[in-house]
Image (tube, rainbow, N blue to C red):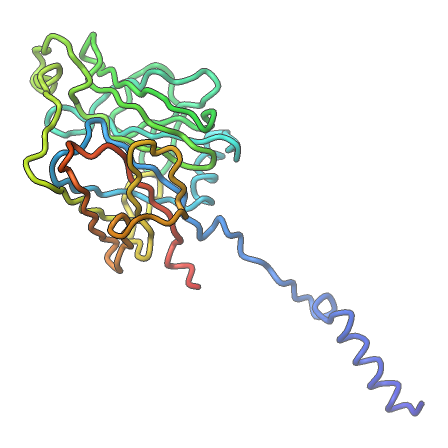
Length: 280
């Protein structure tokens, strides 16, 4: 073998074993959690009987993990999470405690650009629990600081790796003597909603979430499906009947219409997808 042949052979051999270590180049794979949105299940304190507008924040799996680690919590992939947006009779964020939290869950609230651990004190607005046993159904109850009674309660289903959410505004599940405080005057007086039309429309706007609030840009291409009745069995990727799914447009908006011919909507919504900023 000539000198030139030996040189060419050596170059080819280097190519076979890989030249990246010699050049100092390392290939870095993108963590899928950076782009994958946390699957969310959206529940309702009262069964919807009229058109409803929803503006929701959608964190990625990586962002949720980062938020949890910020308060010293390691997310357990075999467990799920729940969050409640507590509101008063004027639909304003309310200072209230979230009860019916299992001892093995970690309670938190959203404050500014981060989360913080919570004790038994009232939290104004968004509060939740990490690492709940799943799959499991939980009854979440809001207790305002000013009241000696609950203002709202709702059942939510929690599934592994997912985030279940509900807005706890005063609802028909609470039957108490109406409080004297103005912002809670409706508690105990709300009747179960009844539909006036054969169908209602959910107008949904999905935005990025620095924390868990919709404080970022729009998220297009997310899938939103309707889960009826035994909603816990509804998989985010499952095929659904025509009309029971929608995809958000470039502005993060989508419309879903559901029948109310047999009464208020008995079910919830499931949201899944990717952050479009990641590309394909």
